[in-house]
Length: 273
Image (cartoon, rainbow, N blue to C red; front, side, top):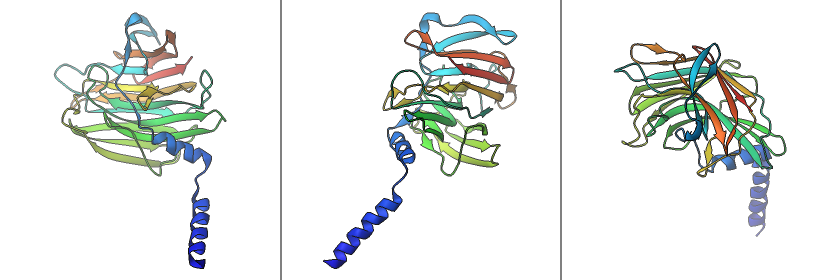
């Protein structure tokens, strides 16, 4: 009896010591809710209007979940094999309405626009709770599988993150996040979830997304501004910049939530509105 009492006390004590902080527990709970990206969901009422984008013009389209720049097709007879981009982790504020939390995610990927069977992607989520606690989570995904966290890769506001997405074949690829501020990097080699989810290399994109949890878009956090620099996609023989990219603005319930500007052939700025 004394031994049982001792063991029970020890277990309770261990559980108390091992109890995660509220922020960590909330983060783990959120990740258990099947977080995932999904292909671009277009809003067709105002699609593809010519608007100013830096010193040039760009096609603009509207989406309920993506904002950023998309290369919708590679050079003739080729396919995109890799995509790269660098951004600075932004300060995050609460979005609209009364919510328990608000989130958004910056990422680079291949496919998911005109080709919706698969997306090879990696990025960083920005989440702020109603109490004001902010978390940054790095992740990777081969859609339609869910997103998974990178482990032991710390991300903080102001860190400069470079994302590399490289496909070695239509069914295999490697994603890398490099924190230029801390000098740390992490990589993951992925395989297509199934035979119907291979890459086509039709699209390359630089996106801030209102991602899904439990098949519903999360309340959007105010990410202020995310600017991707060094944005380039590569085929087997060419590098392709953003000159001919389509601008995607986020539009929900008739309200445009972002302003996207292609600032140069290698830079796109995404601003929360």
